Length: 320
Image (cartoon, rainbow, N blue to C red; front, side, top):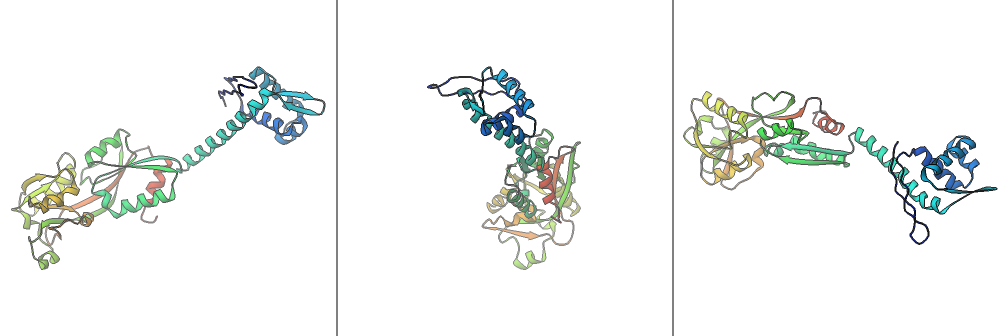
């Protein structure tokens, strides 16, 4: 292994700058053994080589440094000032090597590094995603998990560009882009988001037909952010025999209930978003007849699964 080392002794006693363009770590290990044993015979036994080869290795190291590191005595050795200055740096180098090895091993096991997870605003409310993120951070604390919230269309582009590693999206029936592997995690029923008083408690309990909102402005978020989601809802409305009245666009799915509470119309959301409680709003199941569903999918780039990603995806398995 090639290394570059700079070592400076105290200005009051000895100043030396040691620059090595090629430094083999075994030289460092041999030097430390001799420095700690202060005897070539014991040091040779400790590192598992003969005394003559060890002496040659130390002389090679001294030639590289350009200065003696040991004083040879009749019954052992003694560190020179250069050797004493070199010793703590040599120990630090070996410690860094061990840390580098450990980091590589942990990264290979998916226990170090980073994991960039993207999610739509609605997917973040799904218990499957929330539980997976919670378990992963607890089981793999050495991985820096970074969460990013964006619309589905934007997340798919980010995944293709390598800006995120794993994404949770609601693509409707839209097939994934080329090079993206997508797996369906859940298919949620969609609920009607209605202003309080739109229907009686009994009607809500039985479930309302989708056609009940035929004359109400339908609030959705921009088509460009989730074309598959739009397509699913509009297709269900057409099957129910009506074309919805266009309503105001919401900046994101989690804002739909707020706009409904403001009296701007009605909307539909995946069932998991019913946990967003907004005064003046009720969530009603869709009764008999056509009803849209919302697919929750996880997606990665094909052939780009790192060990950390694999650990995360494993936790998504129903058996995990």
